[in-house]
Image (cartoon, rainbow, N blue to C red; front, side):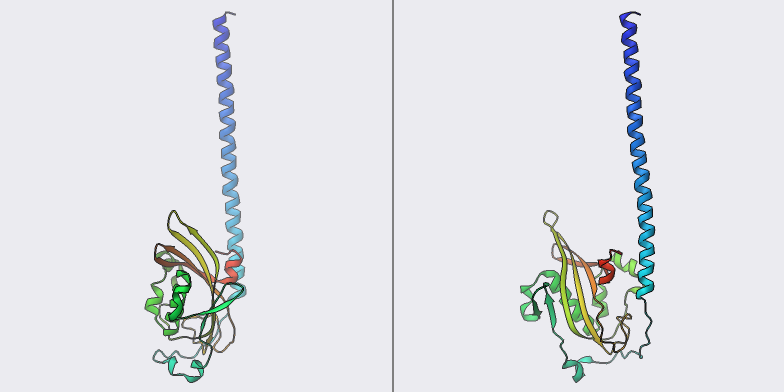
Length: 229
């Protein structure tokens, strides 16, 4: 065999080895991709099952009185005598946020303070504007299009997650909102009974872009901590 033939043979051998290596690498990527798809599918199924179990365990049906949309709750002396302060907790200390000290708190806390006042005032028009279009589309019938003034008391706000991307001027935050509702008529919260002294904490997931704040999602705290979102 001549040197030229030997050189050609070596080149063909290297080509075969290279082809085998490429095929192995492609095969590994295909297997990896299929594995990711399968695991993702399994995870989605398990998540759907968990969400279904959560809904079944936490869905309750209550009977409410006919709502009075003309009722002015600020004329109710018994409600006005309750603790209507909006408390802010950092997990250790609790302070009261009010119109005179708003600047002492993060913009997201100020935002939720205003949301609380919208709920109390029955301002469903303003309330529905706090959400992103994508959340409104997702919420569907769960979004309260109209509700009466709400007799909120024992109110507390707590930031449970806060992350800022300075390069994009975006902040993602999660605020837990707790309160009781006196004489609940179900127009705003239909997961609390009429006069049940219970708190079912709700989390509001916020995105702050510059000075604009929007609610991107909202759910019970138990659902959030369970990762069911």
